[in-house]
Image 1 (cartoon, rainbow, N blue to C red):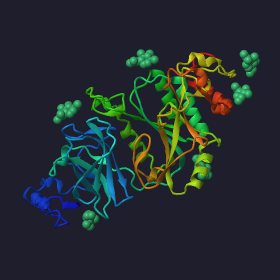
Image 2 (cartoon, protein in one colour):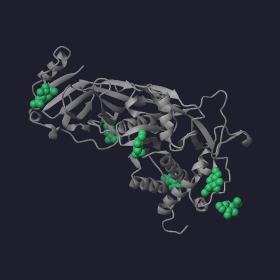
Image 3 (tube, helix red, strand yellow):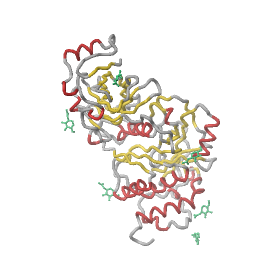
Length: 433
Ligand SMILES: *[C@@H]1O[C@H](CO)[C@@H](O)[C@H](O)[C@H]1NC(C)=O
Ligand SMILES: *[C@@H]1O[C@H](CO)[C@@H](O)[C@H](O)[C@H]1NC(C)=O
Ligand SMILES: *[C@@H]1O[C@H](CO)[C@@H](O)[C@H](O)[C@H]1NC(C)=O
Ligand SMILES: *[C@@H]1O[C@H](CO)[C@@H](O)[C@H](O)[C@H]1NC(C)=O
Ligand SMILES: *[C@@H]1O[C@H](CO)[C@@H](O)[C@H](O)[C@H]1NC(C)=O
Ligand SMILES: *[C@@H]1O[C@H](CO)[C@@H](O)[C@H](O)[C@H]1NC(C)=O
């Protein structure tokens, strides 16, 4: 249902479907002082936080994105309560003293994993041939807009992408303090072809904060503050154990989807993975060559799924890497020393992470996309894997059963040089190495 009304007149353009609504407005016209307002004077304060609570604290808006791919809609990414958020109305404010009201279609993403709150696409059909800049959302259909947060609609008039590879990293939380591995990972991303990394930050150690600031200054990193606990009780787990937490894994699904839409027109490809993961090509030197080859074989594919492999932090190899003696003073793990991976377990699937053409993705989950306009394909293990350096999953496995995998060492000279440049500027800036 799409319904327009002229402020103060209660006129409804789509007479048949909107007759109820228009009668309602006719009986209860908007306050006359709103009638004269133009685009610069859409009422309400512009929402500037990454997360904004709506009235009642049952719906939390992240970002509205214009989406022209299947009809013309504003897709508002929001975190909603699966039962309490029942109805929402979208108020579009246009440049010509008109407010358009339309009932939203609330599409909860299917993988809520048992938590009461989950990500939803709040879909507002856009009135045709109208320049829309702002949107308001409310559970009432006759809301007074003056008290509501006003959201700027993003992704309108998008430029053509200027970047080839962007990494989307979902929430960094728990006072993250793995400094050395983070710097190595950022430098590996750059060596493999990343021009940009978007990271949602909940909490990290002061030293990691310095590292993040360094990469922001460098222009590689975009940090989105993600203070979800101001609004909801986040769980460290992805699945619910009924411990009173309200949303899984610090709202990971919300950040990943927001990241894809945020970068949709800025980058050719998005790599969706965690901060302890690197998508490692095994036949090519970088992602450009990898994706060229994959895309040539699979022209209509928009989602490439790469298998995750654990390189346990407990298995340490002593390589003789010249130029790394100072690294012992830096907190965190040294990726160059973790070059053995756990073998597949017979009865488990290896999780996968994604390389996507963001313009083909409509909804994403962590290991696959939920809705897309292109096909998905699994990348064979001999073409690429995810180097996931973390605690072991198979704790009791004898070390001799691990598989040696030294692909990372091919990058050792550039990696060591680049990491040392960063360390010199932030960790050892006062002391001489
Ligand atoms: C919503 O949350 C805010 C901040 O947590 C609080 O001040 C406000 O009273 C809450 N409103 C309702 C209706 O629960
Ligand atoms: C204002 O917007 C309405 C709805 O899109 C449109 O029909 C009308 O022509 C517009 N008026 C002006 C002056 O642009
Ligand atoms: C992106 O890839 C194209 C080839 O597909 C290349 O010509 C261009 O230089 C790359 N851009 C950047 C910023 O690396
Ligand atoms: C965060 O980690 C750093 C370094 O590991 C530590 O010094 C600091 O006390 C921690 N902060 C909190 C709030 O736990
Ligand atoms: C490590 O390599 C350096 C030169 O790169 C060499 O001087 C040194 O002897 C080597 N150390 C060991 C233990 O092999
Ligand atoms: C890099 O690794 C190669 C073996 O792959 C080794 O020969 C070389 O010495 C290493 N370079 C450094 C700087 O550690």
